[in-house]
Length: 90
Length: 353
Image 1 (cartoon, rainbow over the protein chains, first blue to last red):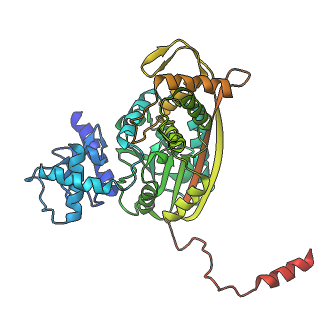
Image 2 (cartoon, one colour; image 1 turned 180 degrees about the vertical axis):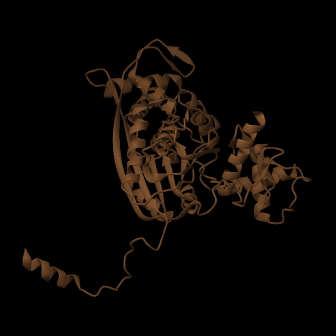
């Protein structure tokens, strides 16, 4: 039963990820099953999914730790956004 | 730590962009409103109906629709239940307040045989997380007037639309709550006017304006300019004025204290609170004193109340329509490409009449 509802949630997340992008960088989002969140690889931020509702307000995003962020942030513009987000969530 | 200080520097430069409203406060207010919005608010209902009626005028259908913040439940209900306006098949419901979205999700009952796929998400209109060219319709019912960067939010909506997609929005205009503004100004002149003589009359007026519930003087002509500036084609703007009458209903709670006076103007404040439409200005250091707030309510009642004991409040709603550019849309011809002179036309038709 629990597994079934989880499947439904995941299916919903899949449909959503077709049209959703990162609110800050407008780059595609990746759905992470383990943490149940949408991850923006471009800026290294995870947006949580609470109760099946993805929260994509910049303030709700959590900055990923260094080892999780797979891509180096070379783009100065994007890292500026990242820092802004860090300051906001702090 | 370095990152934070760097951010401060960045942030201080980026705040040169005008921050009028405190979006975080607005979010909290909408969280609260999610718990006290009545299921059937006549004002919100008529605005939502009026807005969605426009879809019936279009021959086009809109398979994918996005509903931006505002009165979500009404829009969701009318877009997803048959006879559905606009032929929506997939609906995305979005608001900045989690509680609002959750309440909308809880109230959402898919009717049997309903093929509309509804998805809910929490997002900010100023940071729209929607892929470019992915939806056919964007509807915003009374949500956009609290954005700091309205042109920016509208440009993002336009980018989210597919070519020939429709943008529909209703926002509250500058005439909204004019009675409250007058009452508030008078009350402040009476209660606080003598206290701060250092402040120039103009600044005082401005401050009063900022303190009253509605700050934005959003005019009808601005709406047309906004649509054009955001790059929408075939822009359309029209205005409606709704007058809501409030009856006094006994004891009220104001500024942290129960009042045993009956005052119809306080019903208005309660209604605003239930709609999540109370003040969310960034500069809220100068909040209204309880004394002045009471005087405002008293002046409101004595100035505007009608014979039957109700007080009116004006809500001006500006409806905006715009399309994303598409080659099939009608366009003005190139300048100087006319083959017939207007003089000839006048000769032709002028002689007939």
